Image 1 (cartoon, rainbow, N blue to C red):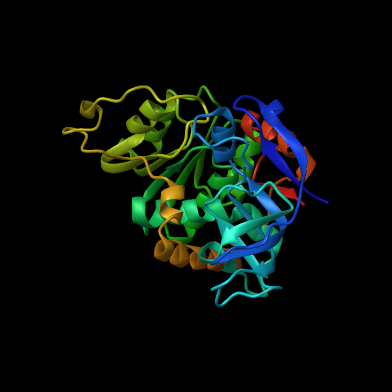
Image 2: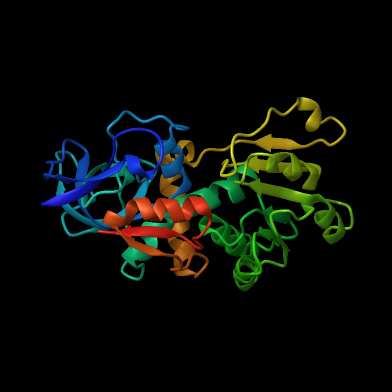
Amino acid sequence: MDRKIELIGTGGVEQLRIVECVLQEPGAQEVRIRQHAAGVNYIDIYQRTGLYKLPLPAVLGVEGAGVIEAVGEGVTGLRAGDRIAYAGIPGGYASTRLLPDWRAVKLPDDIETGVAAGAFLRGLTAHMLLTRTCQAGEGTVVLVHAAAGGLGTILVRWAKALGCTVIGTASSEHKAEIARANGADHVIIGRDADIVAEIGKLTDGKGCDFVIDGIGGDMLAKSLGCAGKFAVVASIGQAAGPIPAISVEDLGPIRSLSLARPSVMAYAAEPETYRIAAQSVIEAIRQGIIQDAGQEYALTDAARAQSDLESGRTTGHARLLM
């Protein structure tokens, strides 16, 4: 019998339970996949705690990879036995799942299923940030918070591949070493570091061109302080808690900042954008920009995986093995 992890109520990880499930037949324009692995992301925690609402009971997990077992009526270009990856739709914490056919991205022979399973959503997020939110390129000075995390690691490597100067933040020397190993030019260490002052020193007072903040809480105000004139600040999460209200005067006109609140779920909901971005992610894996680094957990250890991510004990991208 197959298994899935079901969220039965909002709150802590105790709201996750292991249940048996039966195979579902795919409907029109659907495929059923036998999952190899599913990624564990902060959005799963936001959904579990109720910050992002889901109808309950629900199965979390918005990315994964596996093999197609069955295809529904009207599906073309996909068949049983194809290896695929996907992102942007809940239901990943399960041995098998149904998926709209346009979400299933065929994996070339040289791309490992496990790598794609744990990095597809983060790869799409990096693509969104570095191409649509801000067109980063040669000479762009980018600040990446939590630079040793799953998304942070990809952002550092991808931004460096584009020719950017990358400054990272890390909570410990160990995590700073990871960020440097992935190409960060500078790393600011410590949760209590005066980030604004350090950025001023590193940029000769000019500030950064692009600041990516997935920390939230009081950090966003500091992120704004790290930005130079006409810079872009992207707020993409709130791991440290809700973001205080921001006045438009905090952005301009004197500072001339642009504040973005982009959603990778909205980005991945655009079929044509999704198709193009997914191919860019596959190419990033092929080039080694996205690598197989992180923690693996059994499906039954989903609660521990989320706890480790929430407490900052993970580096790289975590994934559940089925």
